[in-house]
Image (cartoon, rainbow, N blue to C red; front, side):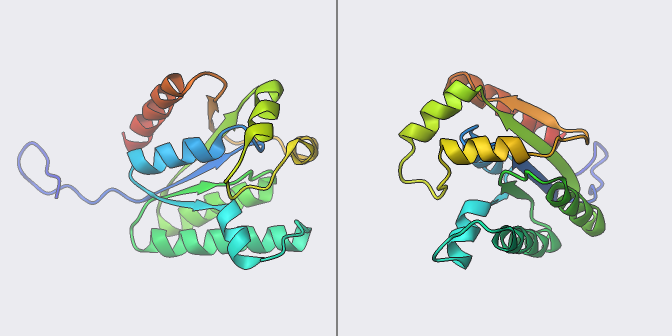
Length: 181
């Protein structure tokens, strides 16, 4: 247990709920994995939850709603145990970002929203080269979600994921340090 300079125990730090959001191919999953490792926190991905819930995926509004509800249900269980959580998903709708924020507030957890961005040409190349990932998004899906993505109006952090891995790692380490501080 941590203690202050006089040796008195410090109260436990509340858990942290972090959303990594943005368009397909921006690099959300890479950033989410890095953050989960650095914080440390449990990582929950919409793409994985979707595959668990729906052997045949149709991406209907009802299916998307069920995925986000299950994602938040799992996050609630972990936060309730005092464990920090990183959520990886597009969170293209403001209502899902707000539900996550409300969940954190209700459970006394800290909350952070991290938007991951990349230029369209970088995204196109990444999506064309993607193999072996839980995500099924291609460039057509990227364009559709870009059209429907509701602007993020609440305070949030932004990670530009267009540079190399070393620069990305430094950016994510800085964000993790900020979130831990």
